[in-house]
Amino acid sequence: MMNFVVKTLANAGALGVAVWLLTPDIELTGNSTADKAWTLILVALVFGLVNFLVKPVVKLISLPLFILTLGLITLVVNALMLLLTSWLADTIGLDFHVDGFWTAVVGGLIISIVSWALNVVLPDGD
Image 1: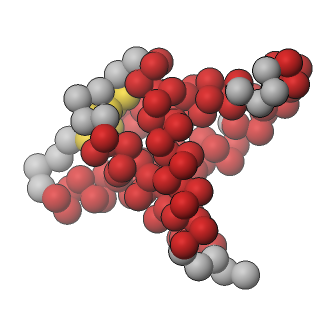
Image 2: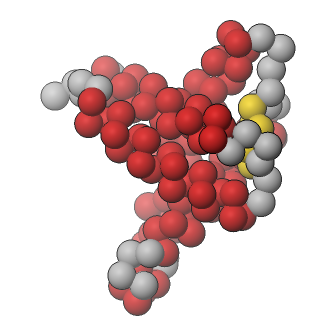
């Protein structure tokens, strides 16, 4: 359980950095800071769920592309997962929106780097 909380907080932090760096293209709206923080945590939960359920299937289907591109297709897969998270967030009424594929590619790269760094720094449940 502690590992899930740490990973969700790391995802929320990484999403927050991506929103901060790509503000006009990745939007997180809300009335107050508390609303934005709550929305960010909920979006991190959706993002974690998408990465847990959908990403392995997409990686398995696109395995030949992973081999052909020596793993660079991971940038595209991460961008698609971020766009799917944006769509799901809009569907369930969360104020989070990613504007376009290339923004999602850069955002996915930022989220991957920051999430990795936060997972190294933050303790896990092991």
